[in-house]
Image (cartoon, rainbow, N blue to C red; front, side, top):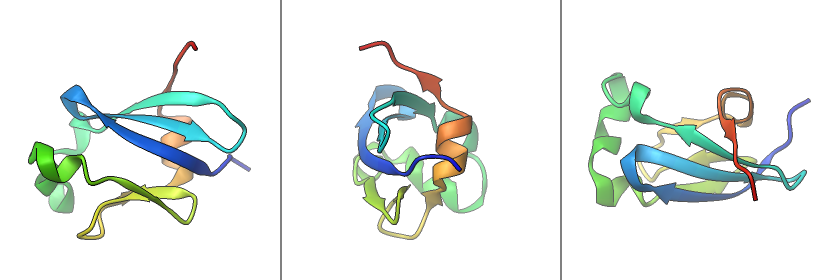
Length: 80
């Protein structure tokens, strides 16, 4: 079972810095999703920055979200 997200920060170039409950820090690239359905709204940088943690995953005000599994499995480790 993958760990839940405990912190998410919007970075430049539509990336998210994610900290998981196991204290791993990873970077998730949202750019590949920006032309797909409900995710097109995330192209607005000020809206993109409204990311928040909800139920162990990340979401935006208009219900775009990424599950903890997607974030954990498809992100890149960040060295601290």
